[in-house]
Length: 252
Image (tube, rainbow, N blue to C red; front, side, top):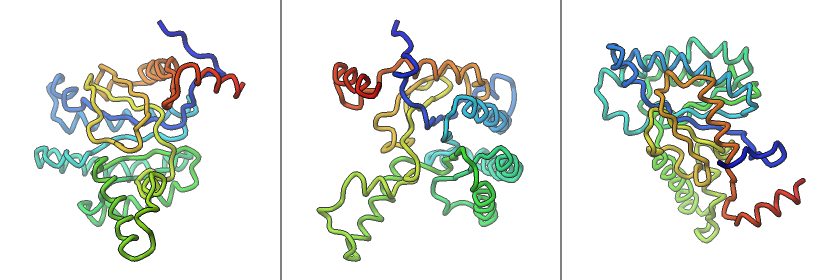
């Protein structure tokens, strides 16, 4: 078994992303409706947010609703967005008081005007927070990259940018998480082992951890176990093991 890295060698952990999976299965096993599972999942956000604060995590990004989720039953989608609006309304002052800054990423074109206004209000109210909570709602990694490419293409068409000057760095600046470091760790609950079109560009070198429990059951203990596993990893970013060792010695 790989030993846990020492404090000096432990990889930094500034940004955690979570794919919150298993709400429906959690509800079905209890004879409840699907929305009840999502409600339990919303309640659990508070617990994991607090666990992140305890561990010094600066940014928590949650995959709340994907671009593909529009294919789910209409009643479930309506219930999810009603729950999302209620969460924003009920939690924004609590987030402000806990110094958590809220950001919502994704395609807002299909939101109601009321929801869009509520999000803007919440983002403004929490703007002074020193920790970030990012909610990805109607979000897809392919959509994110396409929108960034479209923005650069328009700059080329307007004569503001030469095609030869397009770089990874320029494209990254147009993505939804341009103001944040890439996730260090992505956790997916409910035993599924895929990333499902989530932060495709940003997670090129993100460590992945898959938890067997459903999202409503993913508490502080499970979060701490995921972080322990993360800290056993050697994050090489393309370097060989020997190069990584030299780099660690140079930083010591």
